[in-house]
Length: 213
Image (cartoon, rainbow, N blue to C red):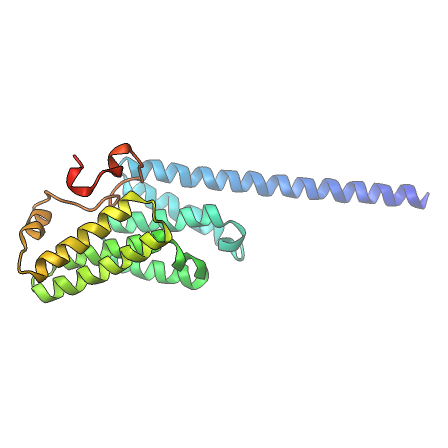
């Protein structure tokens, strides 16, 4: 009798665990769908809708302790796609503060290529907006260093390679008193890669920057 009772208890416990696990997995899948929907809105240029959807996803995951450790892939995607929204809306100060907060909660994000990539993009944008040549050079130096760190973490990322080469080349030309490429950049004839769209790895990315169409 006792064995039968104990068997029933174990069966009920196992059923409860399965039900809880199923609810958690369904919740996680729904959370990922929300992020995917925000990604689509951002790719379509609707940063406002994307921001709202990312904020909703962030509130939902905020109730999970150590979310960055327990759900690393989804959490990472959420963090850096929210960064993309800040960048698209020219909210550079908020972007920096957000990155600092994310790294404080999940330190390993500071080793991620995307962390240094977006930090470099902000530094680059600020640099070319400066009127003083010395300030521009200083900003480009910071951007080049951030891209170098991003490249060390992700050496096969062609967008990072391009941005690193661009910032380094501009810096070198400014040091030589040549600012023609900087003027082209300001006129929109040159640009960073992956600063306003989804990451793409097409064959053209494998060409040297000067050969890209």
